[in-house]
Length: 394
Image 1 (cartoon, rainbow, N blue to C red):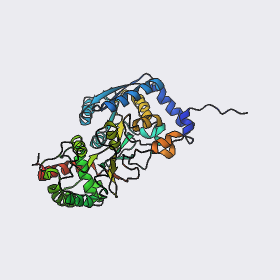
Image 2 (cartoon, rainbow, N blue to C red; image 1 turned 180 degrees about the vertical axis):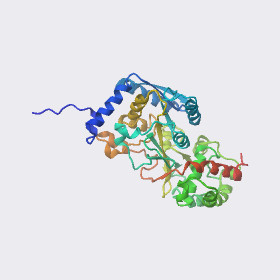
Image 3 (cartoon, rainbow, N blue to C red; image 1 turned 135 degrees about the vertical axis):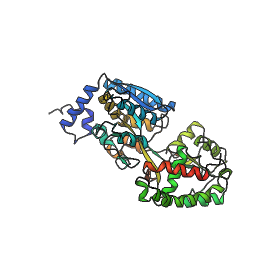
């Protein structure tokens, strides 16, 4: 009987990969062994930090790559540091080898030519990514292989069926709910991230996803497209919690007000958040998540390699592990992190495929359509206009 020649498990999972492709990746792995990767990532969550440390241990075991987590509070400051290094002539000994990034920070890195070129599509596990998700653009800016997707996020509304039998399916129904039950709805104060995201959600819904939102903002288009939003908020604000003379200081306060029965809904940008909060005892059993019929604002968070990284091969190996089924399933586990996967279950074999499809009953239904983020240039004028109109409240 002929024996099947040994092939790495990864190659078996990618039947159309050429031997040259496999040899190229083998060369990357050889170069990476022994390298140290300084991974700059937001360090404000013990849960996320623990996950990254686990991933670092796995990559050290499997590939001989050492990953050092550099905890940051502001990705924009890291972008400035990379830019400063380049300005000083440091083109191959940078302090950052991999960073967690998306949105405006990616846009700046790309515009200034600070990123390694066209590497993400060469990761073997990139074949498993779900390309129905918005993984090839980042706030409308094409990623062009300069970022590798890591996880997904989608704006999510939270309610309890015992208190709200039928959640609103669009912005107008949300306004109707506020009219029926004044004082029972709220959103955080701009420029809180969740507040700005909620504004973008309303703007997308009210404008029927006007195409201008996906182009760099201009004064004339801003005035035209946002006019329905300001008219809507003028009606909504007097009906909100404390008549919008005060706003929750963030989603933690919103969750608390919701749990205490002062609000009918809460808000998150993690579709699994309600399930996590039930497990932690922050929210009561029976809560559910919902989105609008047209869809909910969603984006992907990525990892990127600066062009002056001194450990590019090691960074690629770590980025490849982060989109492996093992790492994605652990990240999506509600007891570990609960961050949604970017993998396509149809491309993953065995029990892993079923696990990727599973959703906790409290989580946002997987059938909720994604609406891509508007162009990043809309954020600043949107926040400024809101503050000029409504910022006098505390």
